[in-house]
Length: 112
Length: 115
Image (tube, rainbow over all chains, first blue to last red; front, side):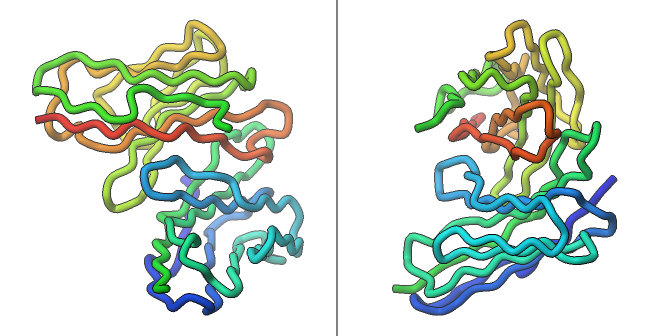
């Protein structure tokens, strides 16, 4: 089946720093999604990308759908303590394949 | 405000007990999913449903079973709980039409501990 490689596995940064994480796939995706999971909660959708090359922002978050359709990245600028959590990328081949494939997650810790 | 609800949020139960984890959504989504999440963070799909009376096993083998008698309800049952079932269980749902392009909406999860 489809697999996603998400990196880094964890990040330990100081407040105010910028953060970058990415996902790569062995196969083409038609949709890329980024989720954040806070402690004790379920993942929440941050950004959805539907077109190769698309660059989308949500506040301090920016995500891009790679031109090859096999990768995506998420940047967080000027991190704050509430950015702490697990970030997941997810991809879908679209069509009749309704299931998302999730990356293994990036654990972000922000030191105030 | 959450449109998908999981109960209980936390459950500590003895070995051998039968348990049912509840999941309900008010969005009219056709598709629903159960994920198991270990402390290692990774999400493992254990069951999914594309509609009423449709259930399929996911990528990770699980001793649990599910049912989908109503669109809004997707309970997960363990007939005989074991310590190896200790985990976080997450329920999710998604719309039809654009496939998974709209993404999944997740519940807050049930943290199950079997002692």
